[in-house]
Image 1 (cartoon, helix red, strand yellow):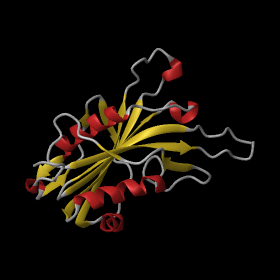
Image 2 (tube, rainbow, N blue to C red; image 1 turned 180 degrees about the vertical axis):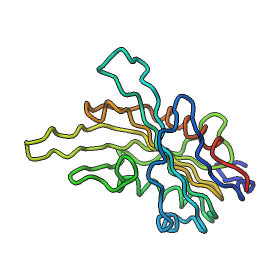
Image 3 (cartoon, rainbow, N blue to C red; image 1 turned 120 degrees about the horizontal axis):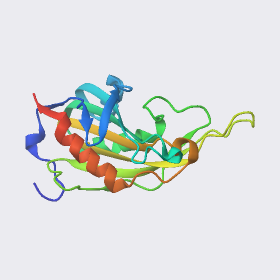
Length: 202
């Protein structure tokens, strides 16, 4: 494989939801994508999976940072004829979702800060991966409720000939305080590890 091409050997795989990814432990199944969404993205005969993971706070004695981080995984497996196109389609839909995969709450906005970039974390081989930083703008309300915070979070996704996986990572306290989120490099590294953990030969 060279030049960012997808390896032919990636055909014939399915996705499972691992119990943990580094310091992140699965807390729920999350919102599983639907078959219609998979077809729109270019995944034929698709099955879908999802998982929500939480990492403990690195400084639990500091109440200002209490909460840790949350990783959300959306997975599709089936037949993908054009992984590059499917990957771009997935990233283009990220702003239509809420923070847990559901539709956005009224008055909120999620949009990319800049275009998606191709990344290749250490040890990641055989597929394509792109990441982008998203800006979440909370609903400002009518003055009777506390406004939602504005914060950023990275989204990374991979695609090969059988699997498509999307990952977003949010710092929980920043949902109320605002902030810049974890780095795109950290999110890409976690996504690469999930790629290795979640894929199984059919």
